[in-house]
Length: 242
Image (cartoon, rainbow, N blue to C red):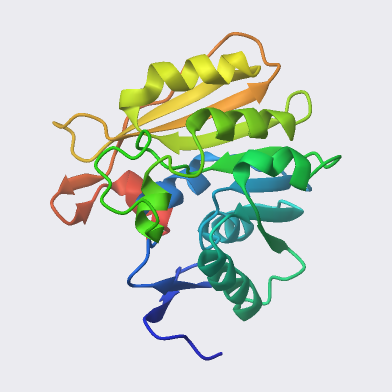
């Protein structure tokens, strides 16, 4: 396989490789943590919204016994890289990348339900702080093309009763996240706050919701990323398989 200008091939350390572009938005630890937090049972079908270059479906394929994984992404370049990644890893039977708008997921997958929906959506509200809202990085980080409510509403439509929803987001929007999830009958069932260091404020939150679930949430122990700058904690090393 020939890489395009600016692209690189990253070893995921799980038997698979990922095509990335240095100029555009590359996957980060948030996607890795989401794939670790999500629970996919044997034979289940998964939909990953805002899939980017397909990192979450590939990680879930490596760590679970799910039957099939579908990624939905709007940006053509990311879709192309994701599809070439799938082909390079010979995962065409296991993972499908669909180009489309998250806001139209209900139409794109009309009549199709998934056991699990995952999403690593844009975190920042609207175009606050944006100089160019059309850059791939900006689209990945800011709610330019979809909002938090779009993601949750469309996820709920594609889940059957008791279907599970997993998302990574920012703690400053936690109250909004829970309110919108409950609005669309995705009952928050499990939550974990992620801290860069033990003495810092959390900078990520992992959420699980169940379609039509009862009102009861489990808060897992905090996840600390670094013991000191550049040195992962044992919990993070386990997630990376070190």
